[in-house]
Amino acid sequence: MSKFSILIVGAGPAGLIMALFLAKSGIKSRIIDKDPNFHTVRSRGFGIQPRTLELLQTLGLLPDVQAAATPIPTMRAYKLPGGMDPVKTWDLYEKGRVWPDRPHANGACLQQSTLEEIIRAHLARYGVTVERSRELVEIKQDSDGVTATIIYTQTGGKEEVRVEYLVGADGARGPTRKLLGLTFEGETKDTDGMVWGDVEIEGLGSDYWHIWGKPGHFTRTHLRIMARPITPGEKKFGIGITGLNFDPIELADETKTKAFIREQTGRTDLELGQFSWLSYFKPNMRMVNKFAEGRVFIVGDAAHVHSPTGIDSNLAWKLALVLKRHAPPSLLETYTAERLPVVAQMLLATSALYTHTIAKAPKAEKTEPENEKASGWFRWRNTALEMYGINYRYSPIIFTEGVDRAEPTLILEELRARAYEGYEGSGTLCAGDRAPEAPGLVLNSEAGNKSLFGLINPAMHNILIFIPHKKAIATLEGIAAAVVAYPPGTAQTFIFFKDHETLGGRNGFVDRDGHAFAAYLVKDDCRIGIVVVRPDGFIGAVVGGVEGMDRYFRTIFWHTN
Image (cartoon, rainbow, N blue to C red; front, side, top):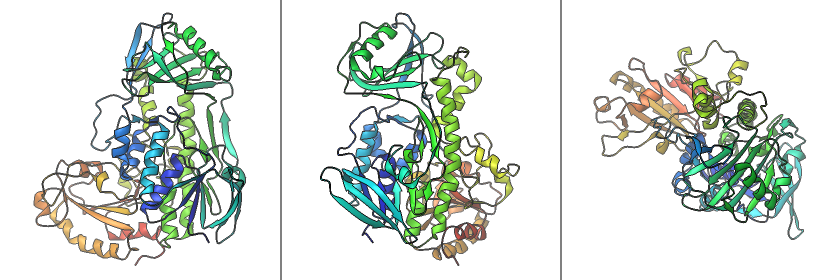
């Protein structure tokens, strides 16, 4: 067996995040990628959604990401013909939104290549580097492990490596999915096309995300040309051409693209320089029929292909527990069980989003930004983009104690159907939901305050204990004894008191502004509130005592007393 327990194939965001999660859990992985060079295309994967920013925060990446990222520019659409006069200015996300439980409500712009560079730098601190020009060509597995054959593409060398598990993060065209024989289900929008590129433009301000389209159809349009400033104050723009009535393959030619942009926008005054990158793209809305085969797993675009993307951490913490022999291998079966409904519903949502905003809609009504808000479409679109609604309420390994916090009238299939959309406005918080943020936590009456996301450790289960009144304090000793019985290094506890009077001289956090008790729906008259937050930031259990907490952990660990 190799000195590495896991081989990760593919060094994009999905593979790198997987490696970083494992590294923080004490598991060193080996990462290979067939490309000889790191990505440098600036407009590749330029958006980071709010939920992804939360994940990056728990991994300790947020300061570096925020230093490199820029805000999503204000959108500005222009009247045609002419292309000079603005007819509408709006924001993709409503600016100035501040919610205590959602700290990154507006997303950010950051090129995928920059994000990858940041993650690689953090991985290097754990001694993990990417091996380039390495291509996976064969997989053999048995009950004890996986044997992978790797070709060195630049030298012609060949290597066989033996690991316990293999993770394919090599994209839709990568070999892992094909070697496993997994099929893609869904569709490629062959009748639609997009062209993307990076180019310097003279005569266009960098304060706005510029859009030219058919008048009155700024969202549901036959053709749209966009110019997004890559860096405020600079002349470099990311160009996008979407919709119908053009050949995306033909426009992959730089000269034809420049002529097409001038003709369609009417902006003959714009001087377009040389494209540093130009490519066409056909939107894919596809996913595999399962995310694992034996000891081989697929993540990211190797598992599903769709237009907007996020980063997921569902598999990493489960692999870490199994490799440390703290959890049975059957825990890994829940990766497909939990993620498949999310991705299936995500494809439905993003396909609808694509159809509404980009694809062919010849009989569509005029849909302008202000009408979107009135119709509810604007809210639905933002919900789909933000990914706050993603949940695992249907999961076999979560536990909610008490039906007052759940959706008792929904059957399992109905719960799966809401895996992506979620339960916005329902007033419930259940196991399987995203764990909300809570700022204003004061430790032992000290000066200054902390936030919950700043406390959560992505290498552990985080047990949040809410003490609403002094009578609840008596249960703390029993909780501490139960946690000691769990495998070492797998769980940590945080105690939150309603106020300083309840805290007394004890160790714990005072919920100074009430955000924690409000976000986690802890009532003043409840006996005690215990919320177990999994390493991936989702709630594993919502219970009212030690018995409920133990019931949850018995589904995770090999043994608990």
